[in-house]
Amino acid sequence: MNDPRPPAVLERLRGRLVVSCQAYPGEPLRDPDAMRRMALAALEGGAAGIRAQGLADLRAIRAAADVPLIGLWKDGAAGVVITPTAAHVREVAATGAEIVALDATARPRPDGRPYAESFAAAHAAGALVMADVATFAEGLRAAEAGADVVGTTLSGYTDDSPRLPGPDLELVARLAAALDVPVVAEGRIHSPTQARAALEAGAFAVVVGTAITHPTSLTRWFAAEVDAAHRPRPADLPASS
Ligand SMILES: CC(=O)N[C@H](C=O)[C@@H](O)[C@H](O)[C@H](O)COP(=O)(O)O
Image (tube, rainbow, N blue to C red; front, top):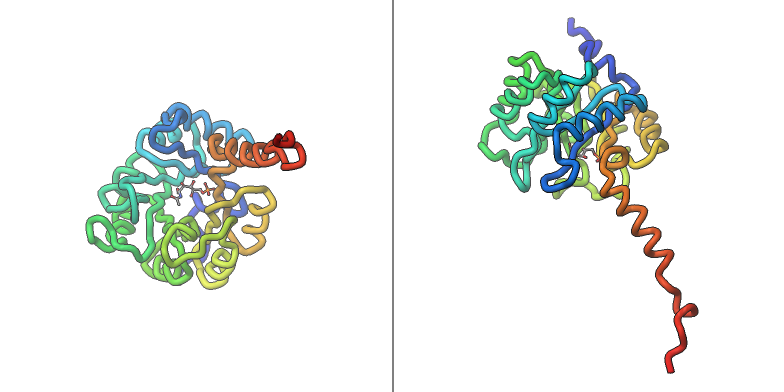
């Protein structure tokens, strides 16, 4: 009989918040030590785990924190970029990340190989697989292929998923009801209320990135609102002569 309990490292995330610490190419915080500090700050605030990108960031965070680490390696400019091949998986697992996140959408993969090979590479390295999907069908397929956890990470970022302003809670609920493996809610969770709603929809854990760790986006959100309020209304403009 299969053991229905998730592996111990996943148990540490049950009902908890994972914080994604990522800076993008060319940004001021794109630096492993900055992301290490960001991760430590998130852990001080109550995060139970960290998700991070890039081998150097993962190594720096692994050395600093003994918490479940979801690792990924974004490589490429479009399409499947999240840990796109088995070779990337092996490198990510070698950093000590217990869980390797990878794109498990139905999109063509850069090396043309099935993602089952990436799942096998993670398992051979002793790591678990977090399958990042965009649709219900992709979630079912990834679980059947042996994913240890399924994340809604890519909903809104593929041609056949809805571009919602907030999290895809319907996808979370449908996958959580259908799958035996844990479903992690990830993507555009921008408030504590939304994080709670994701858990109430059935998520095993919640990953929040931008709203906690991306100050440039946060500043943009505030600046847009402030600038809109500051723009003079027609009644405030001096009458033209
Ligand atoms: C689509 C994609 O590439 N998502 C990436 C996955 O690792 C990250 O850029 C996101 O920040 C992460 O998923 C967390 O989501 P949010 O930042 O919306 O809380």
